[in-house]
Amino acid sequence: MAEALLVLHLLVVLFLVIGFPIALITNHTLFRCVHAALLGGITLLILLGIPCPLTVWEEAWGSRSYEGSWLAVWLNRILYLEWWDPEWVFWLDLGFAGLVFSSFIWRPLRKSRH
Image 1 (tube, helix red, strand yellow):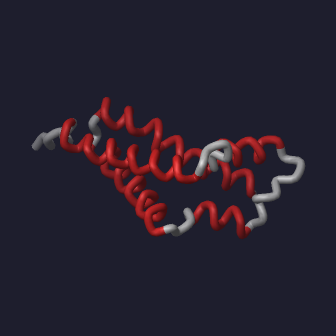
Image 2 (tube, one colour):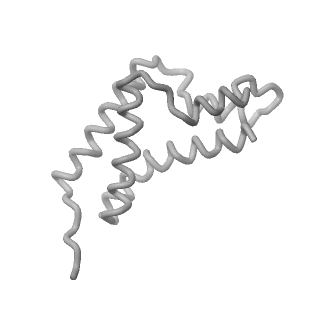
């Protein structure tokens, strides 16, 4: 179960990172709004110092030990960017959020067709 939660967590991160260029290319209104809202929520959690709910669940289920699970160990290293200083992760998130939110100015949502 812990590995499934880690995979879900990684899928959310991939949606945020890979979803941005997809959102720009397709310019799909709902996709872009959901993407921006999720990123905004995560950025707000970071700014307020509140841990991600998925991280809290992982810790509650004891998945931080990952003894004997190669997949879980590597997913954990990738997901939590263990090789980076947390301050860098904070600034990268803020920069990425700024880029995503500014994209609504330089790549406006397409007009609805009625």
